[in-house]
Length: 219
Image (cartoon, rainbow, N blue to C red; front, side):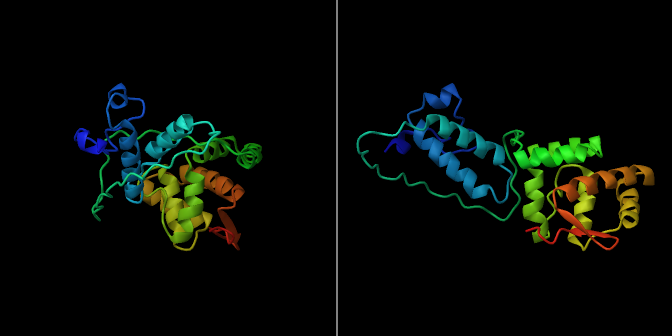
């Protein structure tokens, strides 16, 4: 088998690269592609490897053959042993690349509406959409998970913590930001306005009287 002739780095997601001339010259290049992808899929729940997975997807799309005119010969699937994943936090050995997502027509339209009222809020909304954070909030907040717990704007971490715990008023959040981030109440107030403008426009938050809460249609 080709895998038996492969070097010791076979299947290592932190080593394999579709663009590497060294990898392309390896006898196990194609098989290592599949094996490293399987490794990434197995750890995606504990390590943010979206950038590496996106690179695999782009490479596979480029390499996809044109539709065959004759019946293709089926090949036996390659058996890839799945690595055991421990419950301990994992540390990436490769630098994380910034993954940028294209703005949809709906996103662009919503951002334009925000910009008519608050240019800074529109800029923040654009960044969140391109980084995939808007989708993260939609998926994680209903599960009481903070998408900014380990990275991203600190003020949004505070906002999401309060949303997870039932919501906030502008006054209560202003005090919380001043205490947790060491900001003046004026600075906190401007960021709260920006957060409400962005999350409200994208229907992530709604109002319940004076309280700002998770939008009832979220999740």
